[in-house]
Image (cartoon, rainbow, N blue to C red; front, side, top):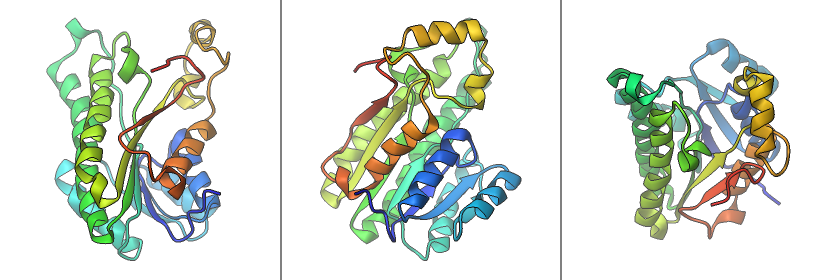
Length: 245
């Protein structure tokens, strides 16, 4: 049983489709949750839907304030931090020869640098507790590449390599750092994809369907729980067989 009773968990990017499912799954399994995002209304809705959940508005692009965010979030959770789920991120697509330096830097800074800083300051908290779990959400395209997403794919591939290094550094401190790499999941983003293109995508998925946000949430639940204690530096691919590492 994936029992997270009394486990203090921060979830960034909590207000999107995948984030919502992660929150519900962790909540249903007893976790104390702090949900973070950039939209007040959606955060307030989460608070209405889940008793005792903590919310804290924060934009991870503000890298200079990440240490303070981790400190504030931990205080909201009564000083403890058992797990952080780094789910927040952005896309800013363009073909490589048309991609501006700003488009490149913005995606790398938010998706990779800010995720590193989230991990860094979360680890400092976890060292005091002598244990912890970090779950970083990457993407299938960080392994396969994708048209018009050289910035995004680089940021997601970077998260995988970074997570392996962090896992090596802190394994002896009982801190596990793992990734989840979603394939194409039913969200507001995939709803906007043209049906013809969506059919092409599905034709490349052995399971012959898009994934559900719950598929990602189930993977988060496993990696956040004690059942994954001997798994470290790994990437769990959740893509219906579209990409097999």
